[in-house]
Amino acid sequence: MKGKPLMSSIYEKYQLKQVINTSGRMTALGVSTPRQEVIDAVGYGLDHYFDIKDLVNKTGAYIANLLNVEAAVVVSCASAGIAQSVAATIVKDNANLLVNLHSAAVNEPREIVLPRGHNVNFGAPVDTMVALGGGKVIEAGYANECSAEQLEACITRQTAAILYIKSHHCVQKSILSVEQAAAVARKHQLPLIVDAAAEEDLLCYYQMGADLVIYSGAKAIEGPTSGLVIGKKQLVEWVKLQSGGIGRAMKVGKEGILGLTQAIESYLTQEKTSGAQMVERMTPFINSLNTLNGVSAKTVWDSAGRDIARTEIAFDEAAIGMSTLDIVQALKTGDIAIYFRGYKANEGKIEVDVRSVDQQQLTTVFNCIKKLLEQQA
Ligand SMILES: *Cc1c(COP(=O)(O)O)cnc(C)c1O
Image (cartoon, rainbow, N blue to C red; front, side):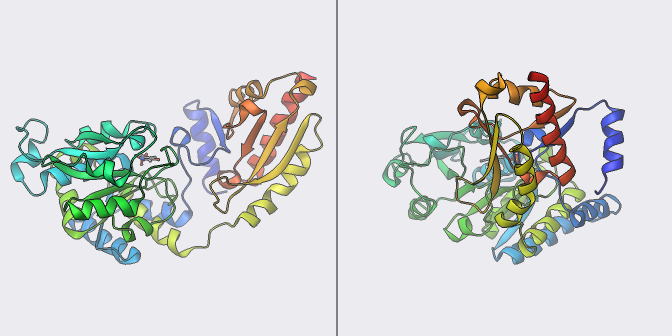
C-alpha cells in the first residue's frame, strides 16, 4: 500500500502507537487518508512557489465552478471557517475593524443568532469559534426546540448573522430546517451561515438558501487538513479579507489549498465505494469472527440511512467472561491500538467501519480479537 514502509519507520522513529481506525472519520485519530492524486497535489504544492493571492482566487473560482456556486475559498479547517465567516459578517470591509476585531468599541452588530440545540461541542465548542470571530452567540429557543418564530424573536439591530449547525451532534427534533432559517435570514436581510463540516452533500445547503456554507476538508471530502467556505461572492470576498486579520492565525498553506481543490474534484467525479462493495469486503471477516466462541458478527446498515455497511460484533459477555467495555479497552491499549465504533458497547455490541482499513488491517483486527479471547479462556 502507498507509503506504508515509510509510515512504519515513522511509527518506530517517534515510538508512536500503531493505530487501526475502524471507527470512521475521527479527528482524534487523524480523520482520513487521502487518495494518491490528492497526495500528489499536496506534494506539487510544497515543491513550487505561487502568487498566493492568485492561487487563492483561481482555486476558489475553480471550486465555485465545480459546485455551481458564486464563490469559494479554502481555509485551514472548518473551525477556522466558522470563525472567519462570523468575522466577515461583522467586519465586512471595514479596514480598522479588520485589525482591531476584539479591541474596537462594539458599534457594529456582533450578535450571532443560533438555535440553542445547535450550540454543541464538536470536539471544541461552537461558541468558542464564534467568539474567536468577534461574535457573541445569542441562543434561540430551547435545548430541544427552536421554531422559525423563536429564531426570529432573537433578531435585533445588533444581529450580524444567523448560524445553523448541520450535524449529527445537534438536537434534530423540533428544530427549524435550513430552508426556514434561510427564509428568516432573507426577511431580515441577514446572512445565514451553515456549518456542514462533516456532511457529504456539497450542494444542498447553498441551494436551500445559505449565504455561506462551511465544510471540513479531511472528513467526507477526504482532503488534507483544511476547510472549505462556499457562498455568495461578496461574503466570500470578506472571508478572504480576514487573512489580514484573525485569519492569519489560522493560515492555510499552498499544499492545503491545492490538496483540497483536487480532493473536491475527485470527490465529485470518482465513484464512491458502495455499501454492497463494503459488504463484499467484510464477508470473510464476518465469517471468521463467527467461528469464535461467544462472538456473533453480522452486517448492519448505517442508522442515518447512508449507503454504508458496517460489521456489528456482539459479545456473549457471560461466555467470554469479560464485559464489552473491557474488550474495547483492551483492544485500544494493545501493541496495535484498535479503535471501534463503540456507541453501543454498553449493549454488548461494537461496530467496525471498513472504509478506513485495508484487508491486512482487517485480518489484524480479527487476530487481535481472537488472541484476546484465547487469553481470557
Ligand atoms: C468536525 C466538525 C467541525 C470542525 O471541523 P474541523 O475541520 O476539524 O475544524 C465543526 N463543526 C462540526 C459540526 C463538525 O462535525
